[in-house]
Length: 314
Image 1 (cartoon, rainbow, N blue to C red):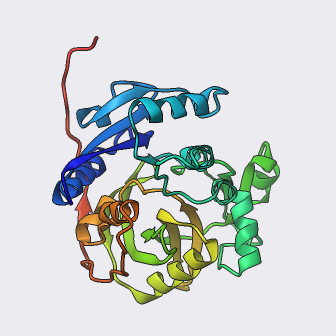
Image 2: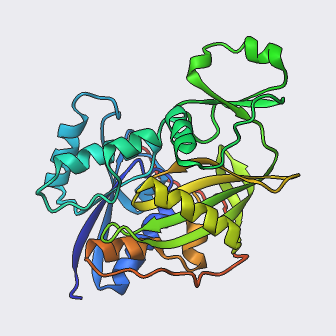
């Protein structure tokens, strides 16, 4: 493949420096000069170390799509990737608006992205599709999750019926059985070309911060992979995905919690274990067939660290 440029626009890339670097490295292997852009509200974000920052608009701004289309044209963007939950819906809408243009946006249809952004709709979808969820609400404690929440923000644990009765704005929460046990993230890539699963990598979340895994280890356990495959095949989602599962510590039952139709925050754990999703995505862009990869490393530990950067502000 001859050397040429490829421009990738991150929507809300913010802290995804290592993932941006991985895309750049994969480009070099293919003889491609990849340049990263990131659409942000603040120029002083970590991704600025490796990307050109584009100061943009808020997701609900009425001029957002015109602005994004202008950015795509001016910067000659080839690929658009979302890194925030609502950015998946934005990307799906943008995908419609760029039909006929040579822009690759590896996300699912807007209606699917909207379903998996709304915890109530996801709950209904799981019931309709026979997916095991923590639905027993007769025993306390219970857990109340904001319908449109992310990164564990706003979650409440209800210890008794009085706390449930006194919960304000109940319609804004999904109430479920509180399950105590191991939490798993599962990084998945589904090829946009043939809609086939390319990789499924469960990892156990050993430590989290702000709802995001900062210590995790891959775990090659077939029941986790099979349960994840069942869910993925029923969703019809494509591109990079991240599932959240939980295992009841006593019964060992597995429950589906949620799915994000985008790269997860700690996907580097799976990538460096051997499930190279940036490569899969570039293959999809260049219409190179991906094949299922099960040869990633089991018990591959990732520990995240903080790193500082300094500059004089403008």
